[in-house]
Image 1 (cartoon, rainbow, N blue to C red):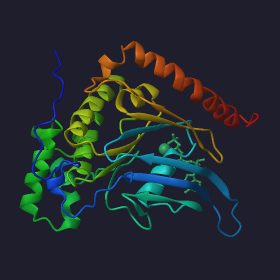
Image 2 (image 1 turned 60 degrees about the vertical axis):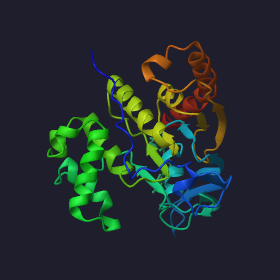
Image 3 (image 1 turned 30 degrees about the vertical axis):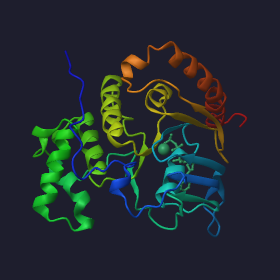
Image 4 (image 1 turned 90 degrees about the vertical axis):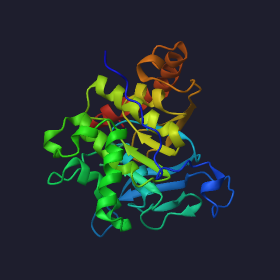
Length: 298
Ligand SMILES: Nc1ncnc2c1ncn2[C@@H]1O[C@H](COP(=O)(O)OP(=O)(O)OP(=O)(O)O)[C@@H](O)[C@H]1O
Ligand SMILES: [Mg+2]
């Protein structure tokens, strides 16, 4: 029987977000970890280029310990919204705020797991994780030790010397997860992180993510095209409309008990009711996208 992966006990570098003793300088605040305020994002506004409004007037708040999933049809602007929060894209109108501060450049408190595999093929798994500490000037020996500890947490203790091409897709995603978490970011931005994996591996990765997340409940903004995955993981599921000028059209609170195990929680009758309700909102938007791509009415 396949044992479910468990996160190892929290290491010294992972501080509980809510523990008052660990953050003496942080003022008590009710400010959400992430806030989008009427954010509109447009592309191609340069000379001669047609302006394409991808997202229009998006309002969203993610609490400090909240796990929010975004679902929506392909091309609607999910990655675009994450890029705005990360500070990689500047909204044409409106604003993004991270821990109460307006996003003006790259958002330091955010860790970002990209849609594409972003490991460096010429570095071992351990080096790929350790490299995330380089900008902080952590001595190499210490960085490698901490990287090994993180590889252990994601179930890859024996794989530190492997190169990315010697790892399975699921193992590479575990390395990428460790690479993001070793910096102890307060906010996790995850863009279809388990997208290319098979269903069983996705469920295992989801369980691993929930185990790691439950240790200190960081704020998470998680994009997925998989509605079941969104419901199984999140506290709230946000639905985006089809583009252009995509909007946030619905938000559903997921009041399923925690801790959750993906393949168990899927059997809960409440899960099915939520799935039906959210799909009801999503279906029309997905159909609009298919029609538009087929050249039909938008
Ligand atoms: N740099 C860019 N220049 C022009 N258009 C862009 C750019 N980036 C994204 N777009 C467009 O903006 C829209 C939203 O793109 P985005 O990548 O955010 O969609 P998505 O919801 O993440 O889609 P998917 O589910 O397929 O990943 C798309 O129509 C896309 O073509
Ligand atoms: Mg995307």
